[in-house]
Structure formats: C-alpha cells, structure tokens
Image (cartoon, rainbow, N blue to C red; front, side, top):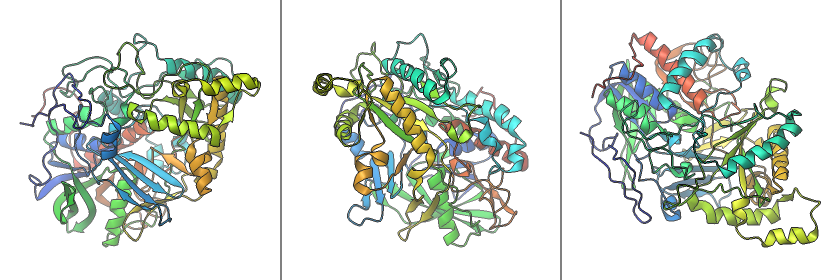
Length: 601
C-alpha cells in the first residue's frame, strides 16, 4: 500500500489540498530489482508515456527519475522555499561567475551558458510540474520539413489522429471556462491582439487570432479522475509555474505516471542514470542515487529494453556519456538543438490594471488571476511564411517572485524600456512614474517562434552539458517577435521592456543577445540514418553513422524533435512519444489497451 502524504510545507504558509494523495515512487535505496523487461529513464512527457504504455502491455517496467516526488501541498510557496528548491549551474566561460548551487534533485533546474539559458523542471513528472500547461498543435507545415524522416511524414494521418487522441484523452486539456470569473489579464491581451493583428497580419477580425488555448488544467472537482486520482478544480491562483498545491494541474503525476503504477510499474526517484552499456543481449543501466545531499556509488541494473525520456538535455547527456564508454553512436549526437524560439517581453505600467502576478495562499478566490497562461494571440498564418509565424501568450509569475519582479521591471524600465506613448505630456509622463503598484499594470508576454535549430549539446571537461549556440539571439525571429511585442505594449500604453538577457541590463552588461528557453528541443534528432540523425522515425537509436539501429534502445522525448516547433511543444512531444510506443508495441508483439477501466492494482 502506498504511503499517504501530508500536505504541510515547512518554513512557510501551510497548504491544505482538499484531497489526500498517495506516493507513486519507492525509496531509491531499496527495491530496485536486478533486471526489468523495460527501464525508462526520466519521467517527463516522453518517459511517462513510455512507462504507461509499456506497463499496460504487461511487461515489467522500472522508471528512474533524478528528482524527488512532490505531491500537492509540497510545492514551494514562499521565496525561501523557492530558493531551497532551485539548482543553478552557470557555465559561461567566466571563472568569476561560473559555478553550481543547490542539489541535483531540486525542483527548478537552471543551466546558464554563454548564449542560452535553460529553465526546466526536475522531479517526478519532469517539466509538467512547473510548466504553463498549454496543449497546442504546432503548425501543420512544421511536419513538411524533410528534417523529419519520410516514414514519419508518411504516417501523419495516424500521428495527428490516433496518437494525438491517446495523448488528449490522458491529459484532458480544456480552455479556461467562460462560466468562470473573467480575468483582467485576458482582457488586456485581447485589447493588444487588435493592434498586433492589424500590424502583423493586416486584419481587423481577431476571432481566429485571439482565443483561449487548451490547458492541462482541471476545472471540475473530482474525487477520482480517469486513472483514479482525486483533483480539485482550479482556484485561479496563477502559481502554476511554482507547482500546483491544489492538485488542479494535469501534471504527469495526475495521469500517465499513476496509470503506469496502476499497471505494475516500479517508480524510483532520486536516481540519476549516468550511462547505458551493451551487455550481450541485455542493456546495463549505470546509475547513482541522491539521498540527503549525498551521491552514492555507481550501481547497475539490467534491461531488455531501455527507453530514454529525460528531455533534450538529459537524454542527450546520457548518450554522450554512453559514447564515452564505448557505445557506437551517430556523429549527429548533440546536433539540431533548438530553443524553440522562446522569448519574453513586458508591457510595463500601462494605463489599465492587468493583475497577472500569482496570489498568496489566503487570496480571495472570487478575484482570481487564472492559470499562468489563459489566452493567446496566434500569429501563425497560412498567408505568411512558416518562419514568420509566432504566438504571444499572457503570463503570471508565481506570487513569491513579485518583489524581485517589481524591482527588475523598475530597473529595466530605465535601462532598456521604450516609451510607447510619445505624445503624452511631460506632466502626464511624470505622474505615471509616481503611481503606486506599477507591477499590477504590467503584462508579461511569452512567445514561441521559429529558430534555426543550429545549436549543439556537448559535454565539457567536467561532464556538464553545455548548449553551444553562438549568436542565436541574432536570428531574425527574435527581432520579429520583439516588434510585435512592442506593438502590444503600445496598445496598452505601457513601457516596452524586452527580455533582459536579450535586450536589457544583462544583455548590455555581457554584450551578448542571449536567449532563455523553457522548451529545449533536439540533441537526439530523428533522421533517415546515423548520417543525418541519432534515432530513426520510431525513436530507435542508430548504430554509429549507419542505417542499422539498436532495436531495443529508444529515445521518445523532446530530444528527438529535429527542428523548432514554434509553439508550446508538449502536445507534439506526446504525439511523437505515443507513436514511438505504438510502433514499439507492434515490433515487440505487445497488446496495449487504451481503455480506462478496472486497474490491475
């Protein structure tokens, strides 16, 4: 029987989820068997899908996750808790600032390199724990790119059909309900949409441009969802990106992972896989455990099939280490790294309230901020080139970041801010600066666009993963996006503030236009052979630069995506992972039931 968890947070405000949750994972120090049919490395979207589908096939499954397990009520809820749950690795080539902070199991994982910074989740459920929940399809023209293997492109009817449906039924995305309280930030983004659509697309009608995107958020209270997990309805606190303490986010610990456990999978946290080695017909998985701040000695277990689902950086790192130990892999390993064109800008201190910052635990639920992202300006148009399309989404930083957010915006408004209201009188301009609570009239704008996917992931001498993408911030998509953001800020009569690391204080102090991405892709890209990719269309890893594959070694996560998607990538990653598992089941002679009914245990 899984241990029940309490809902107390140490060192701050106590959260009380409506429901009690059971642990999904077992202690890393005990219980790991010597051999499994399938070992899944990582528990993000790809890894969780692999664990669910393989366990439903009735084979023995083991999931190994570097981070810890956090359930509702255990996520950080003040600045001190956030600090304790953040790991930072700075590797810019500057010995003065380079170094590491935090533990390898901390929830928020930040890697700072010269041109690219990655912010990702670390824990059971991977990035789903701290993402903004958006389930959007990429532009169908993305799949026309010959970077995708022909066999994949020939199977798009199934990818966009059955594979998408399997992911959709498990994640249950839904837009912010119209019967829920209206959101101030949504109204402000809609106001901006009218100006941006006119400027970028030369259209007046925004019905197809501005809308409420599907979200991995539960909006109806349920004592038992489709996999037997209770979930409270979203309360609109806006703190999605620090972890949902109400259980309303449809994170992977609410669907795919408990489904895997229900069907017999063993799940272990605080276990970091370092490499995999071929051992006859088996695979040897080499791992260390992290407990109480201490990293244990390397251990091994064996598997018939190994599935990598540790994300673009994690899966690539494991394979890079494996190659150092003698595994024959493609020279393309690490190539085609993409930032997914991620950027953020701000309309600071506009005319009207925005009210987009997350709310503390004791907030009045009648005045919600809403989910982190609740609406979108979709500027992907068939009348424009694919590379010119992008999306703008509203954003809500967690409440415990409000002070830092306010200070940064105030500084940046003087360092990099551009007034979008030049016709205001000197008196009006001066009075604006004296108004209190500037941050309540500030709108953060998150955007995904099309970068060129020309980065590379490498290991440095210390064994750390490094994103090598010189001058990525100089690519045209980022300039294009910022022009749209400036128009949006102007429509709200706000000061336009570009991403501080691209065009603000940090960019100017380092003399580099760098990029922050929360959606890293690539590193183990699909290809026709080892000469053009790392895995084939099924996710099987190529043997060196040949067309031959290791037929029991797979990668099924964002690492296999060979190009930028230009939109929140989770749904596409899930569709690709579902396809990989569908084809794996066919090759292995497995029968996978996709129905929701009586659980095996």
